[in-house]
Image 1 (cartoon, rainbow over the protein chains, first blue to last red):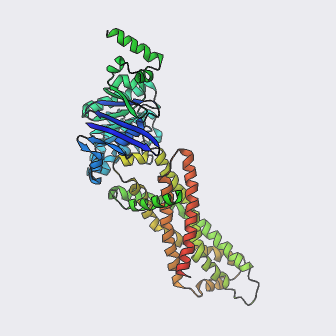
Image 2 (cartoon, one colour; image 1 turned 180 degrees about the vertical axis):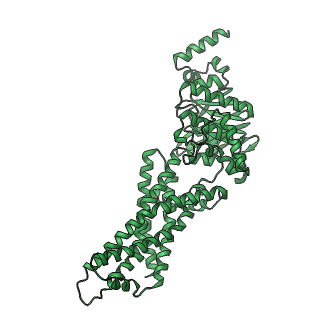
Length: 255
Length: 245
């Protein structure tokens, strides 16, 4: 479980995060949503320790990140898997080498053990025959799946995904969403996804945190988001006619 | 203020380069790859330039000797001194700032743009050690490149002198051997080692700390080349004043 208390982050005079408090539960897909510029990426990078924050605290299963020694931070980071928006695969390595990279860095496994583990996770993300391809030879959807495989290869306790569906067609996006949810459930990982894809919200949003202007404006789940009358959420989530109709149908069915 | 900030950040990067080292089994592969990219990959262009510039130095020296009292062996002597003292260590380093420096900046800068550096940091890897330290180790072999440049520069001078009809083989070899001061070699290789450090670190700095997209990668490469050249020229003056002055 990840707990965030009163998180503040500024860049110069720009106050980006203005006191966010929330928690992300183990074994659930937690979504952070909000408009562009609402502070989602800054929030995610604070959670990952890539940005230092001025005030507040972030704790991972009770361990407050800012109180950890450098070695403890390194240990904690080896328990984190991250799927970047652009996949961030190392372009000088093959797909199999990319997936094995965290194992080479943090474990003492033999080469054959690492290859077996990489093959297992690549199969888990439905990539059986791409081991020797370079990332540039893989499609966007394949790259995302490789990034997920690399993120879970070292059996992380926490999985972070920054807009995992961006640039993907709707069908592949659903495949990626379902894959993340299955993996979260299967390995009981605390998963945090940064997204503004409303399909993801409706499909896998077991917990949803809505940010607006650097503040938490609402939190709930894919079930409660249909019922909320929070104006900021409804303006954002139901900005398209399609989702307005979906919401109306849902509310009529559940009256 | 911006320059002071950059200088401070550069020295912090140097300190971080030696902190929290990457696993040796991974590091050795990176070092070998960088030796191939930065050292072996530069031999061709360095050999080509050194050979022909050596030839030009010999021809220019020969054409500017009109006084019959000046001995003929001066062509070999002047070529050797020019090549060993300045051309090989300093001007090859300026060329390497363009070839190797822009490669380092653009490859690290592209990793920054595509979030590969963020991926390393999230994993708890010291990205500066992972990316910059292997380049620093690879460039400790830079004196090997400069030795080849010295040798081929002098051979180029010999070929131009003898086959161009500017002097005899005996006069040229006599000039190359005449009044040789071994400390000049030490001076040249001290400079080479300092320039190798600059070649590894300044382009890495501009790549690692760049912000923006693909256009900024190009701009960072150009800036890295300019500042690497400026620092090499300034240090060349400083080291020459200290060691030979």
